[in-house]
Each structure stands twice: as C-alpha cells, then as structure tokens.
Length: 121
Length: 204
Image (cartoon, rainbow over all chains, first blue to last red; front, side, top):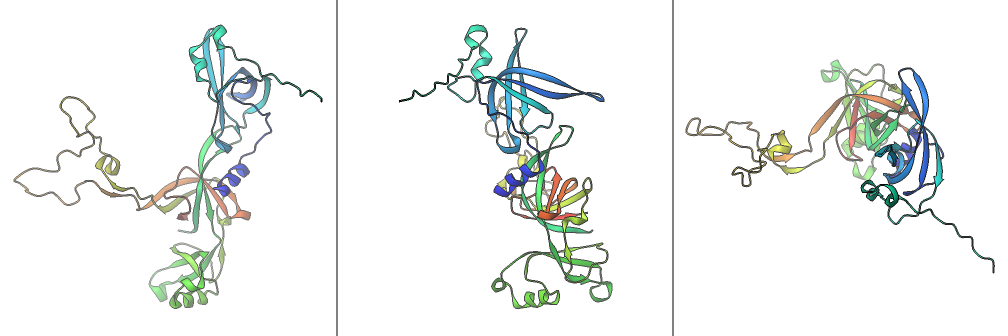
C-alpha cells in the first residue's frame, strides 16, 4: 500500500497549495482550453467538501451565480490548477456542508473563524 | 511474444500535461532471468523461459535446484515461457527497458475469485427486470434452461450459476503510460486482472 502511494506521488507532480478545509472561501484560478488557445478563469466560492486522499483527492466549491447554485469539483493534483487563494476561513461544525444546498441568502452564511491571541501572563 | 513477468502493486490515477486524468495500474515488472532456452532441435519448438522473484533454497526441490544451477541463478518463484524473444542467452537479465512509453501491451493474470455466483454476475444475464406483476423472488433467476420431454435433458454447456473468477484473463491493448527502469516499474492505462500482489505476465 505504501509503495502504491509513494509511486502515485512520484508520477504526478504536485504543487504547494495553502491549507484549507470545508467552510473556507477560496478563489481558484485554473486554465481553460478553447480550441488551441489557453486562458485563465477564476472561480470563487465556499468549499463544501474535501474528498479522497493522495493523488485522487478532490474538493468541491459552491457559489451562487445569479440566484442559481453552481458547484465545481477540482482534483487537487490537476495540472490545470493555476492558483488557490484562501479569502476567508469559515467556522463550521461538519466536514461536508451539503445543507448549504437547501439554503439561500441570510441562512446560507458561514461564520468567520476567529483567531484569538493568547494573553501574556 | 516477448514480455516480462511482474506483480500488481495497485491502481491509482495519473494526470497528463493537458489535464486529463486517466486510471492506471502500477506493475512491478522484472528483473527476470532467462532460465532456459528451448529450441526446435531439443524441444520441438522455440521459446524462452523466464524466472521472476527469488525463493528460498529450502523450499526448492532438488530437481528445480539443478534447473536453476544450469542458468547459474538463484531459485525463482514464478516461471513463464515466452515466444519471439530475439537474441538472449542463458542467465541474461530481462528488465522493463524493453517497453517504451505509448506502446500497447497485453497483460495476463488470474482474476479475483468470486465464489459461487448466479447467472447475472457470471454470464451477464439481464435478470427479470420487473419487481411487480407476480414476481416473487425471481429477480435474478436464469429462466428456462430447455424444453420438456424432448430432449428430456439439459444441454451441455448451458449457462448456469457456479464458481466465478479465478480464471486466467488477458487484458489486451493497454497503453504503457510510464516506464521507471530504476525501480522496475511499469505503468499501464486501465485495469489488469487479479488482486494486489498477484503475478502478471506482460506481453508485447
């Protein structure tokens, strides 16, 4: 099993992405091919799940686009990913935020994670 | 057919430069040793016998020890004959170097044993396809297996339930995605028969 993981990592080039988890708001920039030309497109939304491990790991981003929910799944190892920026860290109580699909507007908000600095004694 | 003996490590996926994700199988293939060369004069046909993976001397019979001593190698666990090898001599080492990326190969293995299975899994029967209208427990039943007083028997070879899997299966035309000679690794596109760690024959 370990040999499999080791080799899988060896045959796929990985880039360094920032740590993020479900509830975070990301901006993902990725390459798009139109015939011969290649251009960049970005997608901003909330991470609603991270799935799989190693080379097959993917994450799903959901955003509201003109009143309709749009979800996109990105493989983390995909060479088409250009950049990932974490805009906001969300504080959520579960790993898969499928409940967001039934909600819109105010109820679909996610609390922002607060980082408290330790008081010096 | 020239080829090599290997072991299945497992499946994963590989991304191509243009972003396509394809399923692939990692095979640890070789290094194999030529243990015997059969010729028209001595054996009545031409072939090359390869051995793969060391085994302990205490688990090897004296007869086999003598066979391996002729090729001046250590005892090998898996021995397979191949046709159409050109210019090899006894004791030669065969590695994954003979394969090139993009080439198509056939992979032979023993499929996973599935035990006693019904006709739907074993022969691809459709099943009844209807849960209501008087179907009680016949959803996956085979249906009729023949007529009545004539021929008054079931024909030989009638497709019925039984032991499934554990057969020799050949997957043909698998593309070689990558060869890593330093680690004796061969990566082919798609799946190959058998479980992880089972022996495979990769044919050119």
